[in-house]
Amino acid sequence: MRAWICLTPLLLAGCTGSYEPKPLTDKQVATLDKALAGKVAGKKVSCINRESQTSLTVVSNGVLLYRVSRKLVYRNDLIGSCNGLTYGDTMIVRSYGSQLCRGDFTTSANLMTGVTTGACALGDFVPYRAPGK
View (cartoon, rainbow, N blue to C red):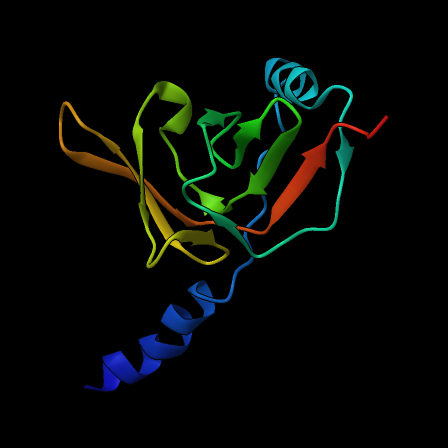
């Protein structure tokens, strides 16, 4: 019992660390730049409609792009890292209702092996829109 009391502060200290995302590689930056070229960032939002997204692009294990149309793309910087996304693992989002929202729990999994490869949460969604004419 005494050993458990002594270890408790050490266990709690491990939970207080902060997450530092890995910097994007040159290839990932090029993918991001190409997808957002000609678009202007707007004010971040907490949720987007699930139905309106047409495609998901994985830029890195921590950055996703949700394409709604040619004129609108949402960037999402994940909270944490879903390791394996860049290797083709599947993203599994646990959300409730018709929207994807900041804080929705997400895991990445290799469907061939059934192994979960990462855990993270969705961050805020930053809209990138083509400027009006």
